Image 1 (tube, one colour):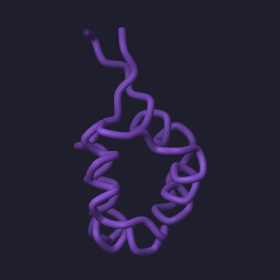
Image 2 (cartoon, helix red, strand yellow):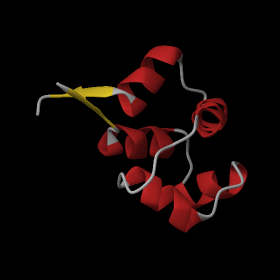
Image 3 (cartoon, one colour):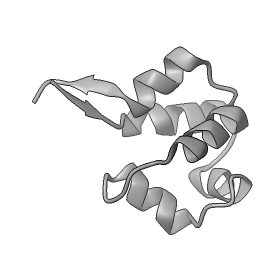
Image 4 (cartoon, rainbow, N blue to C red):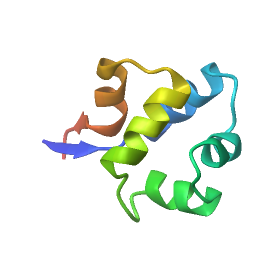
Length: 74
């Protein structure tokens, strides 16, 4: 089993928070293209970035784990 970013869940949580990916990237001080690269696995989210996203979207620890550390059967 491998850990992987759950892009669909992430996008859903952004939408549920009434935001867009572009707006979220601006609020956390990240270039939108950088956010997209991280979402597509080209680079990794830092702990600080995950915390900023959690705070901005109002996510609980369980949801953060499900999004950023999802179990994926390889």
